[in-house]
Length: 452
Picture 1 (cartoon, one colour):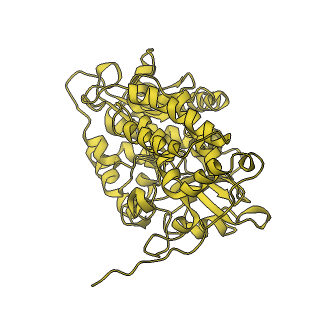
Picture 2 (cartoon, one colour):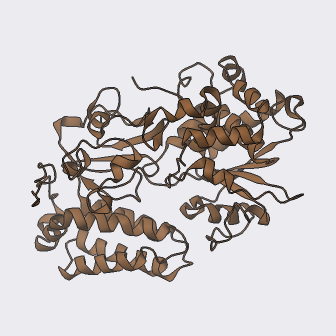
Picture 3 (cartoon, one colour):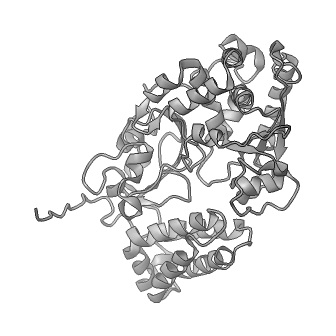
């Protein structure tokens, strides 16, 4: 059984409410942090090696250190709870079942950053979760953990929950800030970065829910101890949202030292694939990261076991690897149609594009139309090259990463499953009644020997 930091008390009855949370050590780490200097807290976060858990994996301590501190200018912490990445639901789980962990994390982080007014920007569809958070904030305030002169420290802090309008683009930090200011959620050009000019033009730190929640155990055990959990630069624990063709979908906390094979097939985690089916492919980090076939998921191109951490999943780059991303782990069995699923993702990104950048606005629509044509048995062989060309002209040519998020799934699907696309085109009637199947996607990889 792996070590649990975030979910260790998840099964305690009533842990959603203040009394049970407090009786099980809740807010003790806020008390501890209040006795430290802000520089000491920042140093612990840096030492921990904590990386942003929203997908980018940027070092949290380094991000905090960039925060500008002009005199007499308010600073803000904004928690990104706009969890809209298909396949990702671990932040929802944290907020729904142990909301005070997030609130304590916000409190400690706000104290360190000098934010007297902090915000949790939550996905519009998470209406019931927003109500849970608001109730927990009221409980914390009634107990003296929010408001003026918290616990006699002289520190003032208020936390507000802001519901979004249900736009995926508002998961991008600058679009989130625009929405929080009451504007249309369009990404901003950077620089200036939010750390210098963020919410209402003030210095702002934007971090993911899981990232801020992880501050609590870092203060509890210390940055050095936290850094020794995991491996390499993949320190601490990571929440994984597991779904798709597995026996035990759900949210799992891992320490990033286990193999992908163990995560999929062990009873402790996903429990294997139902009905004796074989693994075909996986999208291991949410819908925007490259899909990989089974033989590149369980082992790297060099034949080494693939591990559930940032470095191992990305080994080989996009040619043979993928990304940890937001931890949305989507498993596909042998009956799944990669062409259809790629079309579904393209349709999502076309719908969610804000339309500000023409490569994304136009390109996502083109990719959706081409993929729909292929999926319906009306494609031409030239469509594959056209798709490749369109995604290539979107990637890297937009203000925010949504263009990349739309392009990467298409590129990876063509790169690894081109024969499935060709089969759809060459068998226009048959592709409407059955799927391509497993083919060679689970076959062992042939390692080509290179001359010395």
